Amino acid sequence: MGVAIQEMQHLNMVSNVLLALGGTPNLISQDFPYDTDIYPFPLNLQRLTRQSVAKYVYTEAPAGAVTPTPGVSDPFLDALYAALGKLRPNHLGSVYGAIISLMEQVIKAPPFALPDMTGHVRNLESIKTQGEGPHFEFFKSLFMATHSVFQNNPGVWDLPPNDPNYPSLPVPENPSVLQRDPSTVKDKVSFSMERLANFHYWAILQLLNLSYRTGRADYMGLAKNHMTGPLFDLGKVLASRGNGVPFDVPDLGWNTGLNEAASVRILVQLLTEAETITDSLRTDLPSDFSFDSIPASIQQLKNLGVV
Image (cartoon, rainbow, N blue to C red; front, side, top):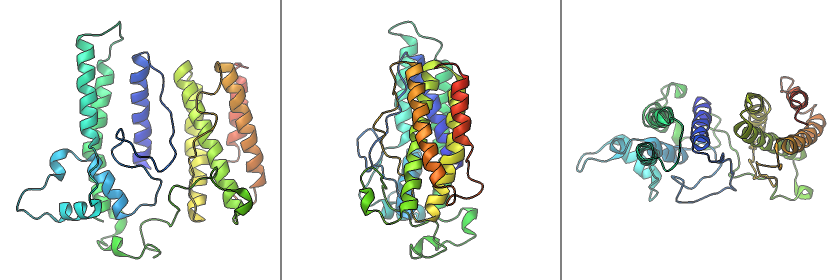
């Protein structure tokens, strides 16, 4: 969860770089699996395994930390390359290094009038440092099962995936609501929860877009509330039921309206539909679920006086 929060902070920093350059926020979501040269490895929504965490170890690592020494056996590197197989992801640090170098060139010879970009360069450097430092060490400790959460059980990854002590819950890979026929779904409750999770995810994308385009802190605050409240709650409930949050691509996109007022009207309608689904699940969701989040968001949006 700490890494997820930090990655959202990184998204915010990079988005602010785009805004400073006069660009638009990039909140495009992709269908899974997604494979492109832009990303360090094929993206899948999948449970945590030694193979899946190996990709993050390699990606976050400074190049020197995963470069074998000829003729020298290293238990960590031997296990890492065995798990990766033929996959060789990009190092995120090198990607950020290239971006930072390009920004430094732009600062020296700006193609047009720019605000002071030095703070943004420092932010990008901090992202690179955080990835190659704490994030790499964290993922490495998961991969090697040396993290304290494993309680000195180095063989935890050798357990059968259905063992109750295995480090992750058995959730499906790349779940989707939109690609399933509702009439064939057996677990109607989980299906409705997945739909509801999609609605919160789509609302978050729209709120983030509004916050960047208008500069209103209210939208960013609401986006965080939906991330840390109902979406997080639904993720936990769905995982306990053997399911996962779909993160389906929204048909509406993330920049929905012609202007701020139109976007807020669409967002209110989206949240109103989500509240209908929430009401239908009241007896199935835990008592501490964030039931008040949607009505509070709708009221706050109306109080902004945009529509």
